[in-house]
Image 1: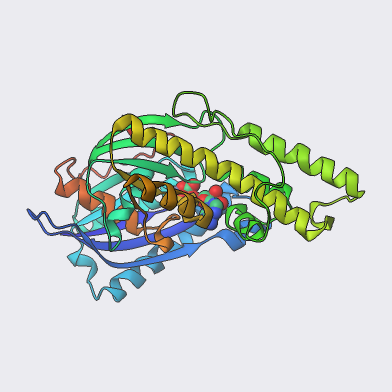
Image 2: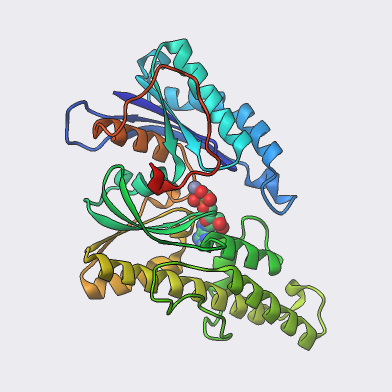
Length: 353
Ligand code: KG4
Ligand code: ZN
């Protein structure tokens, strides 16, 4: 079975092909994937402009489909199922992927399947050379979501805790914006933090001792704002980038340390509560080197295995959508449909699947 996957929930257009062996226990494998990132286009506006995102997905999705078919030397008619991101995400952007996928399915006479974007992230480590085994605790850290889940098998997800306000990715991005960094600021803040002192500024670790597995990052962003205003006043500077470079690095490092410590401690608490010995980290923030270092060291000490997606598959891509569809079909969690009457779900809790 060949599955074509289309991702268009936000600012990346991703298309991929995976092959799954029917009736086999073997994991589906990636045949080809192609991606177009809209980051350069949105940078001028300091964030994603939904209307521009939708229009760009329209321009990119068919050429990317041709690219993956060529790469895999696969004819369009050989595709058995067309999968697309059904939600959560930007409504207009989702509609592009859903519309194109259902039109392709209808033209080919092949069934289609709408996939949950976060399930795509969650299952993306199964595309790596060292795939996890069920059950595991998943730390999902994307731009819009921060969640800890218990994962028993494909489709069996139990929410353990989540952010009650901003996601960790938002804390990275909003703090980075205050520091005069481009969108999306997470990776740029991480780079600025490299030569900084993570203990230079005492920033809050919200809900660290709350006794549950929920997160809150909105207060951290405010603390970064207050701290940077104090630094500007003391230095009689107007812009953050006018401050001495070391001060900029120190605030970036202190911000990153606060986010990483909360993610680490809550992940360890989730492992302890569930008694599970395996952690899967997925979503864009999972690319953060400092987070990986902290998780690896702490899990090593406790004999816990940590799994990540390949670095280039941490952020949004079509491979994870094709993979999630293939794994759902393989595990008989769902059947693909030939109804072609599609809708999208801009808001869609993962544990409602
Ligand atoms: O999963 P993703 O690509 O998109 C969503 O589904 O939201 O995640 C994007 C998020 C952004 O907030 C981005 O700043 C963050 O992941 N991110 C990082 C790093 N790479 C991406 N944050 C911190 N360090 C990184 N290296
Ligand atoms: Zn994502």
